[in-house]
Image (cartoon, rainbow, N blue to C red; front, side, top):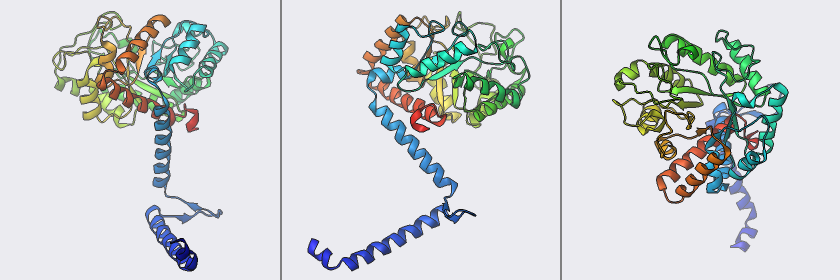
Length: 383
């Protein structure tokens, strides 16, 4: 065969050349190559660029996901609190050993601009995979960054740009906002945090907040799905019970969330809210709400993030972490001591080896988390 090829190399060369011409013809007809004025290159159709970009992101995500052992996989699905304004030795060990996926900064972690920049940089420096660094900068009564000049002002696109620009300058890449809850009763628990008085106002303000943050590459996590506006009960203390049907929920509370999902929102936070006519589990632990309604019916493809799993409305359920992950939650917020955080993470690592459903859901969560980090240029590999 080798001698035959040597003796007929001209024929082989001709066949290869013809094959190349055919491939080039197919490629140019599919992707519509056209010359770019003033440049001696071809401009590739935008769809091809998007296909290549998605392929590259998927390749990076798959490589990183496959490189993780169970310890680092479970660590990646947690967004944890930290104890102080700098990182102590135990927190550094936690970040490095468990590959923690996110850090939620609270008021106690923030003193001033200089300190906060140093803290976020310290978090990045001690993380193998850059984490989400998140705050509640809602714009109404809850704001961790006290020097934010847009706090309390109207929800305009310019104010959203200013706020998200401030966050990114401080090393913060996620805002746990906007509030999409509609205050449906006069004494609604969420009223002083709400960004509108009805579905139209809430939806409009939320979409403006999302758009301004997108311009500065800051993730938003819209909350509290499916809606905290019809109760006077504070879920930080006890579990609210809301006795409405799915039809009534769809016609009211879900209206802003549906529009926000349609806009391409990157993340939705679930609330610790019980709707007994719809499911026996709170929304934050419910497959009905997270997988059936949010994913399948509403078409949401981004991250599902839990509200803090240390809130009084949910802490009586010792299986809440497993339930949340199996329901469809991708990232769990847990505001607790380092010791308790490590205890919960280690217990999940042990169960992951024996529970196939938990393992499958965790794999899905890892890829969604890494894709979001890639899209928002948090992963250095995607920059």
